[in-house]
Image (cartoon, rainbow, N blue to C red; front, top):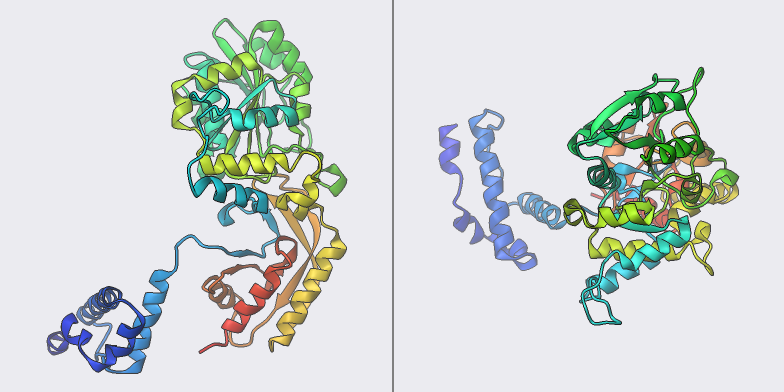
Length: 463
């Protein structure tokens, strides 16, 4: 081992060798030098650990090729586009909502230069970033006022901190939700400085449970939409109208965390029990919080809408600045909200809603096109079959959408190995494994991505 360690060449000597000439003509000297140093460190470590008993031929084309592959890998951005073939429309790990072209164009326009983010163009004085979307949110939800922060968890935290700090928040035991990443509602309430008062049972809570818990220290009645799980069987929860009447009679605030939040009725497409924001506010809820990057189909943000006097207090709270939305997300949100207004049809303009509402005939036709493209690329064990897709993003977990998937087997890969190889493609393809087969649900694949999937599969056969 010591002999081999002494034989490891210096970086400068390798850079001057003939084996590196082709690399230096294709890449910068700095890139080649850094990659060589990393390769030598790995070789040194492997020799010391006994994992290696001979050195590579540093003059060989194979060694130069290995360095070129590492340089190309380093040039790839860590965050890059991927093809979602999981059938989960709002996939948290894959970036949630696919943005509309109008939203992307708005981000480009605002990000490429300066903007009137906090400038009132009428007066020439400082303006509010909330003004760019507040009127649109109010128009679409019926709210008196609104503001936007960086995500829904921040919306809940700000709303509670500004209205209930040091006071009690009454919540049903059946609605103390946990969202992704093990963030739990009781913890958010504690961080806000409010005091949680749990009422009812896991499966049954009545209005009188809330009423009996209210005392002079109570500030908020908190309702949470249990969008990512269901309690079935012997259950009961009071209606919003009932809780609103109780809150208004006792001088407390009725607040609801909707989680996903949707601006249009999804029931015609088979997705039931997802409350529309305007209906929630019309029932008497004082403040509602929901996400912009889930069923609304926009960028990551948390939207707070409701009574004007309460929203004013949230806007002036010190935490509001810490969790405010950035200009690119604000531009994308405004553009997305405008797609809900005439002359647009949100079900054709907003990608999330388009994926939900597209007909099974269209989905099946896309599966057949992908099947044909893979067969044309030389893959034989390919078939199209019915599947089930889901809204995702913690929404409607027990409700599925009819869909279609493409199943493929590649003789030189196990299903797990195939999935791993496709994740490493220039544009990663993320599918699923079922019954020892690799499947791609095409409800979450666009027509333009069919070619990208075929290219990724062809890349499996490249040297």
